[in-house]
Image (tube, rainbow, N blue to C red; front, side, top):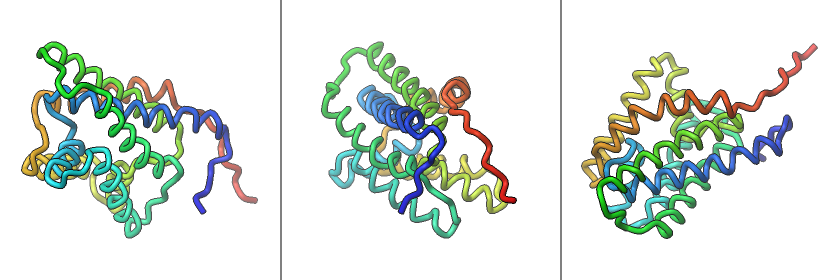
Length: 206
């Protein structure tokens, strides 16, 4: 049975859920902008284009496969980890159903792309700040880093690898990919401290 956090649970869950939903909507806006996606989303879009599956469904399936890699790394997941897989993918599917397939002019596409990156940054701050478990891809990165690898090198290797594979499969790489890489770090750094839920220290066993 998945252990549930006890400290400030309603507040943390109430922050986690909209954070994951905003993340999914942000990805949907970037997809419809058609200017390029983040590395993992390039992979998801590429797999979706080859399999005929909805992109959000690919996000869910890929997320669960990434979680399998956690077991040899002995990573611990939480409720937020499971909800990350389910909510982002399903919200993305819904967003792609509701958003128009073409946004028309280039300025509108840029506005959607930048809005999408911003929503992903806000959503990341909300769900990470809730402290209910990392996303599958973040956990894979930190799990590998705990094995003595440099976290920056691990992140770069993972993201370059999935970007290349996704591009080969037909995912969209472009200005949005560069904008995401440039903006997501500062956005998360801005929003995360504002959304981090402060918890009491765990008692030390006597």
